[in-house]
Length: 160
Image 1 (tube, rainbow, N blue to C red):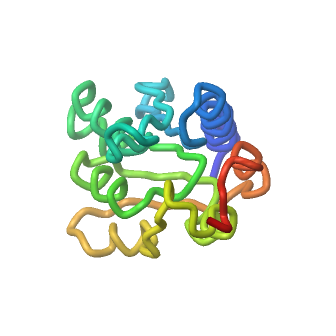
Image 2 (cartoon, rainbow, N blue to C red; image 1 turned 30 degrees about the vertical axis):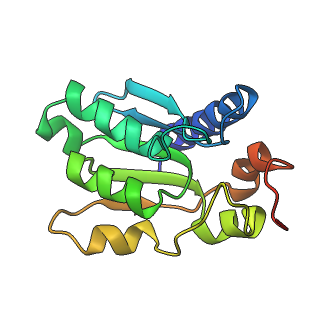
Image 3 (tube, one colour; image 1 turned 90 degrees about the vertical axis):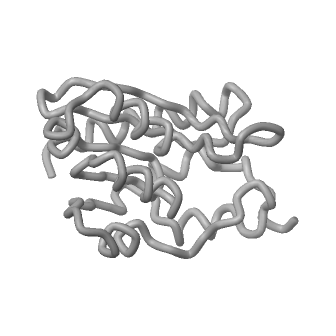
């Protein structure tokens, strides 16, 4: 972990709040290339009605894959305010991103969202998804979970 990691992770928290302010789910991700510059920033765009696969991490990974070489992707980091779900972890894996740093854990998120139908959590840690593949992906997280949770405060209906 470096100071830059904390900086970019906190940037994902800001983007998650921005996503919420725009009426979307409070999730965000960004990819930082091997040169230390932001390649892409994405908020979540999957709130019904709409495309439920437009999670910030999946979209950010896919966009980065169109902008960077495979070698550069392998040396890039995806930062997310929450642990990538199984779908997003698969996208990160297939796009070849070599490192993931996230804020809130999937279990921490579930404690906030409960059984809200807009976030039917899959209990499948991203580390498990990555470990099932042939490519090594470094994972750092959870980190700064209380800060990561701020954008989620009062958003979900856990008792639904």
